[in-house]
Amino acid sequence: VCHRRTYQFISSFDWPSVLKFYFGTDPTLDGSEPLIENARSLGYAVPTKPVKHIRLPIDVSGISAESPDIVKRLMNSRLLSGLSVELVRTLNEHLRTVNRAGTYYFEDLKCNFDVEIGRDMLTDPIRKPDVGVYSIWSGDSDFADPIASLLRSGKRVVVFGVSGMIAHELNELRSEGLIIFDVKKIREYICWVKELPVEIRNLQKAKGTSKGRP
Image 1 (cartoon, helix red, strand yellow):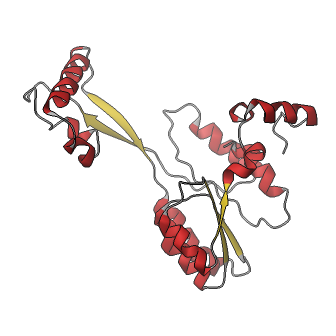
Image 2: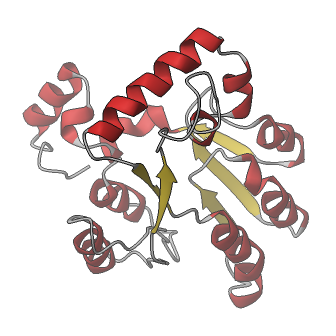
Image 3: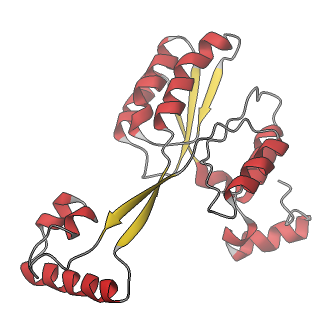
């Protein structure tokens, strides 16, 4: 999704009050801070916080070839339980090769905004009582309770998400008035042009929209 084209698309309607774009700040990533500044210049409110760099040790020098102690740090426990001893041994041998090359940890980046988004969904109706419709661009089950609270307070809520990837907790809220919209239906208006099918790109060029105008 292109944040510029998405902003242009939503702003083409006369109803938006506030558009929030939650994004992490990481000075070590070249595109992080410029993207935030660009989003703000477009008109987004950008709640942000530092991206956490979490080191995952992969030093296997002190364990046996069949030990899952290091591998379990890198994968889901249920997935690990289904691996054979032979496959664990192969993974450890690969990590040993990585160790010999001088790498003893991987770095994972983490910057979730579930708490911040959920908090805003509960407090914004108090700060902005005149806002009647909320549009949430996520199909995450973590937002089921805040969405249910909005619906109970008389607000309309529309979830934009990918068909087949909407949490069942959200689908259950349809009976309470939640509207779920498949974001793929508007991809020609919100995606980076290079991500669109060739036929749509050609159509946009014919209409003069290939530079990002919806």
